[in-house]
Amino acid sequence: MKILLTALLVSLFWSTANGTAAVVAKTDERIELLSIVFRLAGNDEYNMNQFKGYVDDINQWFGPYKNHPVVAMAKRLHVTRGVSYDAVMSMAVHISQPPELQPLVPLTSEVPDHRWGKKGARQFLKLLRNFYQESNFAQFYTNHQAMYNIAETRMNAVLQKVNFDWFERFYGVKSAGRFNLLLGIGNGGGNYGPKVVYPDGTEDLYAIMGTWLIDQAGNPNYNGNVLGTIIHEFNHSFANPLVNANLPLLKQPGSALFAAVKKQMTSMAYGTWKTVMYESLVRASTIQYFIDSKVDGSQSRKLVINEMANGFLWTEQLVALLNTYKTEREIFPSLATFMPRIAALYSDLAPKIDQMKRDYESKCAHVEAIEPFDNGFSEVDSALKEIRIKFDKPMNPKLGYSINYGKGGAEHFALSGNPKFSDDGQTLILTVKLKPDWDYSFVLTSQSFRTMDMFPLVSYEVNFKTKK
Image 1 (cartoon, rainbow, N blue to C red):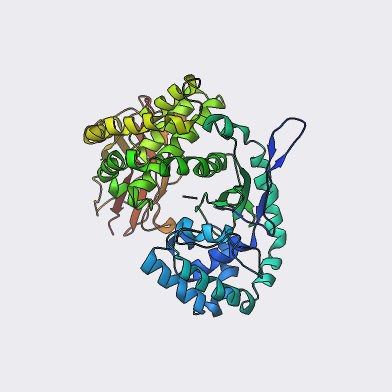
Image 2 (tube, rainbow, N blue to C red; image 1 turned 60 degrees about the vertical axis):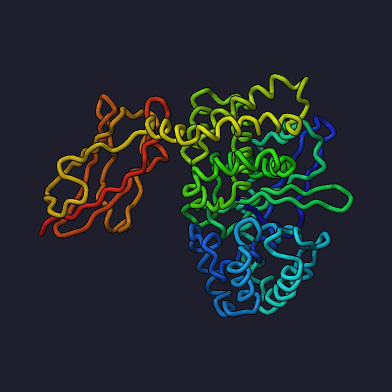
């Protein structure tokens, strides 16, 4: 799941000179409007606060409207019908620009998303129009236009690196769609990939990108790490229909795979086997994009293992199978024709998933010991200057480390200076600055720690207290 913004629909422009697509990133009033309504309704995924200055402005401007009827209905729809995440953004792109906010296509029990329901969608839009007028939303949006312009300019610098022709080549279809990239300024790490299908068969394909990096001046920033998310979101518009067309073949193995990793998947809001099938194909296809873009082997290997760490333990086999698809295009002219092979792979792997979990976990690194005290110790000497973390496998120092605040936040973070690895890579040496009678906590995460075989560290939280 995944996000974007603009006052106009962003369309795909074709260059007659080279046939390549030029897509322009935009902010969008509809995206901000729906995001803010569901922020007021309390949806966790629309209450990320990475862009604190903007969030503060939202709270100040819209705080008086937190009991508006549209907010109350958003709360009910969330509780009773599960309207959240991509369902919210799907509504945003299925309606016209304010103040009209009318459906762009006929609403049905499935459009813009089955979680809305036809009657609920119509009632919600009526209340949304009232909220737009009563809250003077247009003025709020205008007040932030300079910041929106900065965000657009910075995202467009990243967007120039996207090879949009790849999608048609890889999937083997001539898209009826126009690529659109919209920016969700207040959505933090939330990103989405909805699609609008019009009565004449044309489509608008969306990558709605969140905003989670802010510069020192308090403006949105986007770096090269956003590129993978853009590719991921656009892949949804191609991959999801292939899954939908093969549900009878995918249901049994997909259900078994989902059951084995359900806890991890639901923690990422992937609550059904079908959603996991969408994500599996999208993630493997995104890796194929980077393989085709000639990333080096270690990078593509890391991408595969990252997805295994996310719970998609079958990613390695699926990526290998997609490599086979690319070498047999005379037999399989499109990924649609290859889908039975993908379903067969899932059927083969489903009975083996428990062993696959054990194999994966055995390859990951684990914290073996802490020195000079045990984790949780409450009588640590505040004069201590160094903590040593021992791993059960050598780590790759070239890939760095990733250490986050623990439950106590920055005030209870013990580290000072840069960590360093021992020569054999099996110990991390941390410089600390402590004070008496104080709780400390920090978390070694799987983000950067990698074994020599690229497998991640299982995240580990360190907690201790200094003596009086």
